[in-house]
Length: 282
Image 1: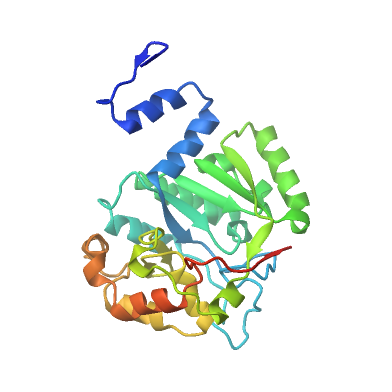
Image 2 (image 1 turned 30 degrees about the vertical axis):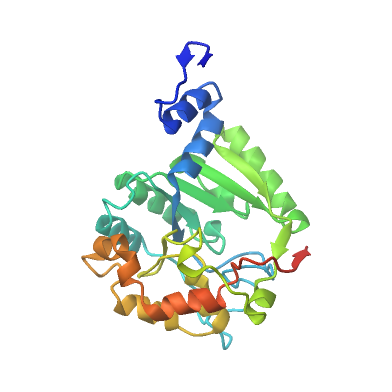
C-alpha cells in the first residue's frame, strides 16, 4: 500500500509506520505520542497539594500530622533524583520521567526546575503533571510536556490561568485532561477486590518516592491506605532503594527480587481490580 511517497508493506516495522504517519501532524501531537509510547518513570515530588480530593491516591485529603501514614511533609531532594537516575542508566533509557505528587507546583519553582535539569542531564525527558495551582510561577520550557489535570469546578480557574500563561509564553507542548469521574479507592480497598497481581498491566511502572523504588505506582501509595510501612520496608530490604549500587540489576530481575509480601499485598489489597467497582462523580 502506498500513501503519498511512503510505501507501507508487511516488512516495515509498526513503529516506523506510526512515526511516518505522525510526521504529518503538528509537533504537539508528535510530542504527546512520543511520551506515551516510550512510557514513564514515576517521580513522587511531594505529598503536598492545594486540593483535598477524596479520591487522591496520595491521600492528600488526609491532614498532615494525624495518626496516619501522612505524618509529615515530604519533598523529593535533588540528590535523590540524581542518584536514582545515576543508578539506572540502562533501564529503558528512552523512558520519560513523570513529575507527580501531590501537586508538583506546591514546592519552590526553582527547585522544580532544578529537578528537571537533573533529569535532562541523565538524558531523560520530563512530563510534568499539575492541577495548575502555581504553574504560572514555573518556566514551562524546563519541561518536555505538561499535562494539566482538571478536576472540574475545584480547579477550573487554575486550569484556565495556566492555559493562558502557557499560550502567552509560546509553549505548545501541553494538554488538559478532564478527570471529572473519580474512583473511590477507599471503598475499593474495603471490598478487597482481587487484582491480577504480577499480570497487572501497570506492573513495572517504576516509581520513586524518597529513597525507595517501587515496581508499581499504586504500591507506592498502598502502605498509606493501610497505615503501615510493610511494602516500603520489604522493598528497602530487598535492594529496591537508591542507596543500592546494584539497583538496576534488582529492577531488571524484578520477578526474582520483588519480595513475596509485596506481591501478596498487591494481589489482595490493591484497588486496581479486574472487576468494576462504584465510582463517584465530583
